[in-house]
Amino acid sequence: QVRLVESGGGLVQTGGSLRLSCAFSGGSFTNYAMGWFRQAPGKEREFVSAIDWSGSNIRHADFVKGRFTISRDNAKSTEYLHMANLRPDDTAVYYCAASHSVIPPVPADGYDFWGQGTQVTVSS
Figure 1 (cartoon, rainbow, N blue to C red):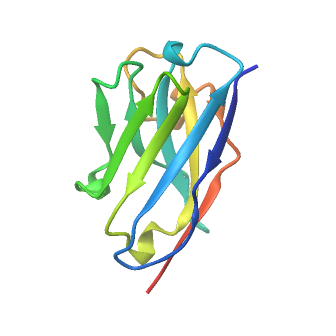
Figure 2: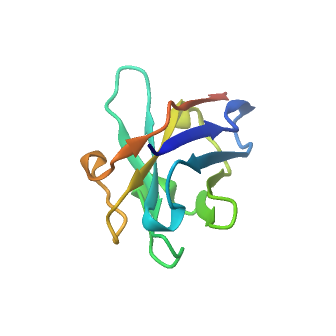
């Protein structure tokens, strides 16, 4: 069974940076596209970014606007989300997800496995 474990969340000031990691186990990492989603209190889960198995097809939500970078290291079975110039409205629980789709999906229902989430809090 595929297992995803996020890490790297925390408290950061406005304008700061964080790098989230998602460790994949229980399957072949290169069989999956990987994504990041987030959910703020009282809001629905929303798409952040996704990457295909090779790293050549990347999709971002509009609000990323060059601030976030998704990447993956297939040798380490790990996905990353580097977040820069963070704002208070980036505060949310961030989830990684894995999809069998060749093209990385945007809708959450395109993903087969989910991590437990890591909290990111941006103070003003």
